[in-house]
Length: 320
Ligand SMILES: Nc1ncnc2c1ncn2[C@@H]1O[C@H](COP(=O)(O)OP(=O)(O)OP(=O)(O)O)[C@@H](O)[C@H]1O
Image 1 (tube, protein in one colour):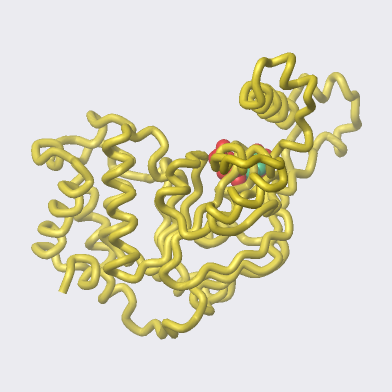
Image 2: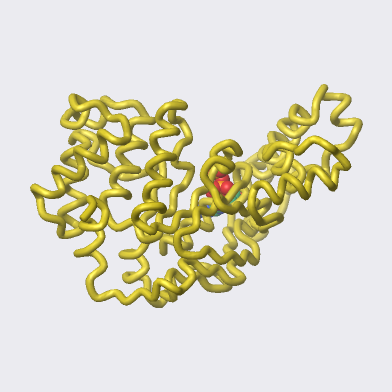
């Protein structure tokens, strides 16, 4: 029996899963935040106090189904709603509208069962920084009722697989780079039960070699251990290398969905090109193409540059 199969067992006792069920069913989900306006914009707009809050539809009527053993990428620019969606799937936020089901269990009604089925990895992982990766992961293993000696062996194996040198495994976490700490967060998710794994920008800040280590591990989790994986990313190469399917999200809405090859073919045809466009072009087409004019391209020198300027402007407006 492999490391991950054993890890899954104690955690999933008493939960019934039908392997024929879809792993994740998101149905018409929305989430609205109320955000205070900045002092600057308040003084400019001179709105009365009670109108000072603006509503942000972070996730807007999203529906998405993920089959068991699928790797699905959620692609979106900064602030497009990716993390909010992932947080609703992992019970950290309650949807305002719609429902999310994980193997048939509702994230609101069956919160505790869902928490045992999913694992979310994110940069803001909470660790005891004075303790070593091994100590932190042993702590996590205890929470999941794993046997100490077994856990120790598995932790060493996973950390080594992720490229953490043996002498760093027992040294304080606070002395490690952000990228290395990110790997420890990934190891923690792999250590516990990866039935559905939610990876929130898992390789942001990692060097190319480490990115490949993580991507190989993600692939292995699906191929060998039947995990279902959702990944949020800005990295189009990663999406292409890893995902069976992607959903592009813009201002909280899914604007395109499908296999990367099919999306590339569709955008190539829409642009009347003969050579297949890149995933970057697909992304830009669905998120901003209609807003960038020929004049913008001329002014900034290239489509990509014009897109960058557009994104920066959008972020600035949002924060005002
Ligand atoms: N707790 C919150 N309170 C108020 N607004 C929020 C909150 N969380 C997110 N938002 C807003 O909701 C929108 C979507 O944010 P979200 O973090 O989901 O985007 P994202 O696609 O994950 O972005 P990034 O790639 O930068 O992490 C943004 O406008 C953000 O400012």
